[in-house]
Amino acid sequence: MAVNKDPILKRCRYLGISPMVMGINKQSNRNPNANSRKKVSEYGMQLKEKQKLKFIYGVMEKPFRHYFELASKMEGKAGDNLITVLESRLDNVAYRMGMALTRREARQLVTHGHFLVNGSRVDIPSYRVSVGDEIVVCEKSRSSVKFKDLVEQTQGRTVPLWLDVNKEAFSAKVTRLPNPEDLDYEVEAHLIVELYSK
Image 1: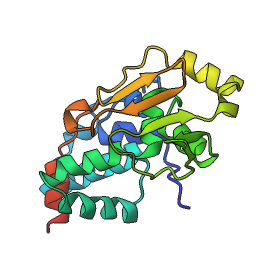
Image 2: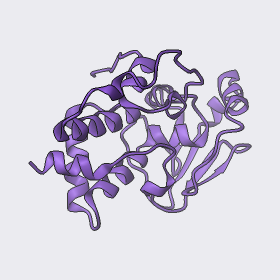
Image 3: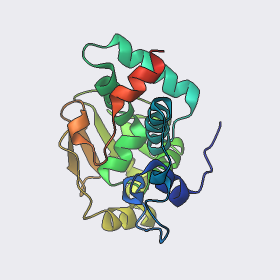
């Protein structure tokens, strides 16, 4: 399995996103406008938007292209559908629930089998949740110090409107599919559609 080992703060600075989006509470002291002096071509802007989404969700090129093809076949705008598909990944849902500090950590926790979806253990981070699905931390894992600490550390995190989270029960229910208005970062998904449409 390929793993992205880029330094997070450096990559955030290059892509123009806040480290808070990645779940990291740090700020770089370097000049944030250092990259903005360079003139970026249209292709460069499209590529940067694609790299931004790939980096935020920890997805490599091949699965990302597969998600784009899925999004293109769905009803509605392909760019909005792509965000819906990425947001509904199980590792992202675990992160949004507040059961992990970062998406990378959420991915590892899912792989280790700490989550149940509708009563069945799922250890595939790319598993896509649907409306009505209930995601719960395993009974055995709830009593661990790790999950108790995570609930405390993520107490102030904003929960998206499409998730009904119950921190005391270590569970969440998907009330509707996520859409671009629910995001805590800015992305121009239409540029990714233009890039893949060439």
